[in-house]
Length: 77
Image 1 (cartoon, helix red, strand yellow):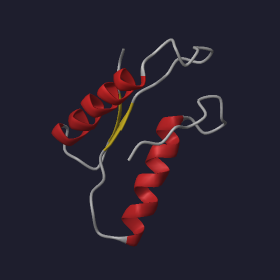
Image 2: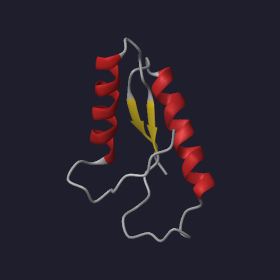
Image 3: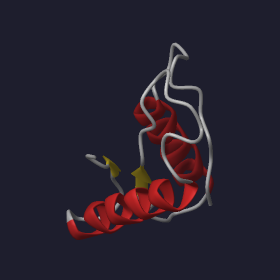
Image 4: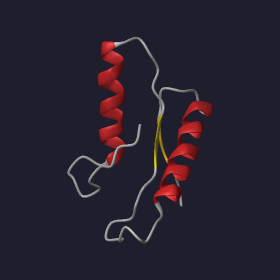
């Protein structure tokens, strides 16, 4: 699943992802690993390619799984 969030919102993307993970875990006994790819505030859509964002999020996802699953990891650019 890919979800675009507003980085300027009061709840940062990591907080939003952790809330999503906890909400789902309450409904079903599963572990959820989430990878976040940050897009710097003020950057235009042409500044970073969608494929690059997905690749960053994918690497963060696998880092979350490798760190023990049921985690949220933000990719570093």
